Image 1 (cartoon, rainbow, N blue to C red):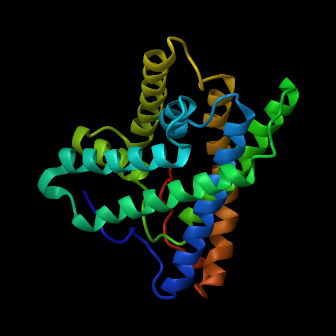
Image 2 (tube, one colour):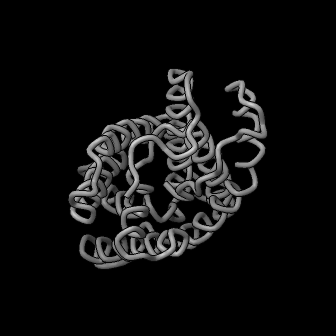
Image 3 (spheres, rainbow, N blue to C red):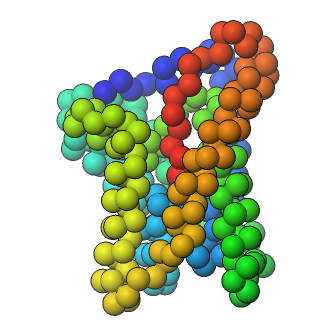
Length: 238
């Protein structure tokens, strides 16, 4: 599997690119926190750690870090000699992301909607913020997070198209969350109608805002629009 720098990545201004990447991760964390506070479920990739966090004793951020470490271990097992060790940086990305999520949960502690309509507002607003964060994180093309890396590794070893693998990956994560929930609580917790809506809404918004923001970032990087690097489908969930 091709590793290292993302194909078509920008050159130079590395400090700015990593800053934009970090801002994107923090915005993603805010979106995840708001959807979690809405209590109607969260995005597929956050479902297992969210369910685990409902049992107490571990925060959503810490559970996310553990999951990302597991993703990297899975990539190593799948790719073996093809795994490029620079991809271990995905672990650091996961640690930073988990810290951001816990910080975001603190910052959104005031949002505890009880009315059903207000819970839906949380899902919709949180999904929109998450989509913006995913897009911003993708723009500088510096690193992949562990979710993206795992989907790419699975597609590589199976020969399945990456888009199809992404759907299967999301469905599998929701299934894993359901199994964890049944084991912990004897019933389904943390997976609701908001999970399904967030799955499609986040991807839809990213698809709409990615092209114009890519053009904007190209200008910021002083790169002619015609030379904008080719797009790579970003992870549509978090």
